[in-house]
Image (tube, rainbow, N blue to C red; front, side):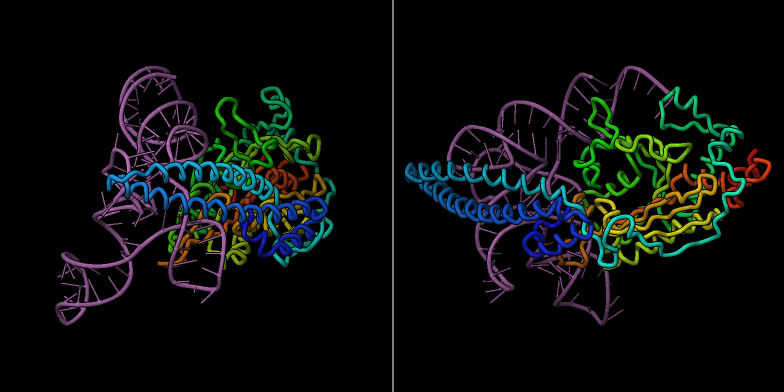
Length: 424
RNA sequence: GGAUGGGUGGCCGAGUGGUUUAAGGCGCACGCCUGGAAAGCGUGUAAUGGUGAAAGCCAUUCGAGAGUUCGAAUCUCUCCCCAUCCGCCA
């Protein structure tokens, strides 16, 4: 969410942000409407507060006369009249403020100046690491997984439906190994505090990070309890400090968490769903940072670097893609995707998305800090990124490390966790 | 699921219709004291919105919403959340 003050102070900045996302035609009218609503709102506030100040003065005088034993009936009648005027104007104000907020919640974040304009065709590969393996004689991971008994898609469909995964035997242990490896890497080496958080969260939490109200259809809701299954650990972890005022000495704060992630994937049914490419439930280790505003740009590089180390240790060739404005998520100001080459599928798979949200989430979630004693509280900047998502990482391991005999060499860094050098 | 008790500023906590314009404490800042420090003493210390060049002024905010009233932290209603105990239970 944006600062309402920005509507009147920098409406062109907002319009330009929408233009760069390619959404000016769609949402430009909203900005016009917001400008009118903001003017109305301030006019009403002014009028209401003037009446309230007058009523307060009257009320004080009534109190004084009562104590002095003097009659006050005339003032009480005045007060009643003012009360009626105030309620009329207040209800108009409430309508205006409510509409303003609803519209404001619909506007995406404005991307940073260095983010290229346009849609996904304008994405930029900023660097590459490792040598992609050719597709010759490499089977896709679902075939490898079936042959080695790592996956059981039929029974997954039976117990849950399409879009769910059952890992078995060495496959199940591979999942557990990744969880330990990623948490150890970020917790012990990169200095993140490891946290273990609920997978069910309330409505306020989902609103704080921007999943609600706009994307309610994408989330699984729990019948009868107004709770939601988290789509990512970003949601509970970023909301740990919702409605808190932090001391500047606490910053930066960084957390890493493993959680399952649940996504309805409404609207993407049938797209890239083979094997482990896209499912309704998957596992992920997430990185979340709370930082001072001045540092958030640098911190995005730091966080992205931490996610990259995970891929480097696994020896998987990847590329870093800076998303163009139109491809950047609703809440994000700048996003790098990490994509790993999957030689069996023959495409780059997104295994991490690292974003700076600047103050967009902190404003919604009301996470502030005091820069120095006596100074006004400011919103922190929040960042997060996957470090990493498991299923596509597993897909790439099964393809990149595939041997001619159908077995798969376990990346060296995972061998102590898995207790195996080879799958199959 | 049942019972009881709660939700007040950065934190703790008093407060049952009008000097609450939210007491007091902790923490913090500054000053006094001191060789220096601690202790002690004194002073100050909420957020948000509106307005203003600024100082300031005005308004709002005591879990949320609605109501009663000239006036609500305080009374009424609805809802949410938390704690403890009981029940159930991995």
